[in-house]
Image 1 (cartoon, rainbow, N blue to C red):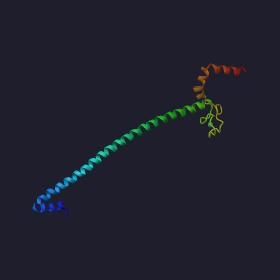
Image 2: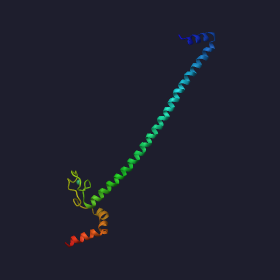
Image 3: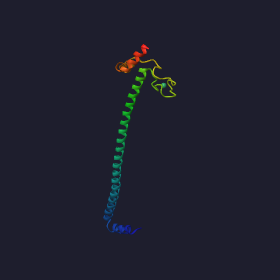
Image 4: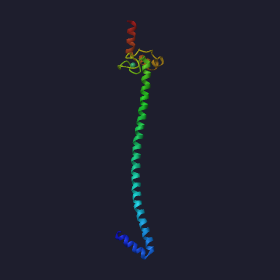
Amino acid sequence: MDINEVLKEKLIAQNPKMGQILELMQQQNQTEKGNDSFEKLKMLNKKLTLALRIEIGKNKSLIQEMDELQEDYKFIDRINDDLASAVGACPNCWGILKDCEICDDNGGPGAYPVNKAAFIKFVLPIIKNTQWINQVVVKQSEG
Ligand SMILES: [Zn+2]
């Protein structure tokens, strides 16, 4: 038994109230140590929460960027399909890429029936407004 315990027991033997006081002091000491750990945990929790918020913020901007890219992709994909149908080309390869699963490398302009509405919307304005095209068309019809 260590000397503090011996002294404590003698004090308690002489004065029973001293036992209660010593017990309370010990409890308070333990509570303070407990509070220390609690404060450390609170601080750690704050740091972790902050780090988590930063990561969530990064993810939000990445998700937003991805959504915008997906919208851009959808737009380009739709325009590609419209233009390909306007000239009767394979929308997957336009007759340019090798090993096309859709047209088997035969998908250039004119390979498929032209979509009239798409032709009028996307191609006809170019023919009307481009003089050299008219000259080529006239020469071909004459020759
Ligand atoms: Zn193709």
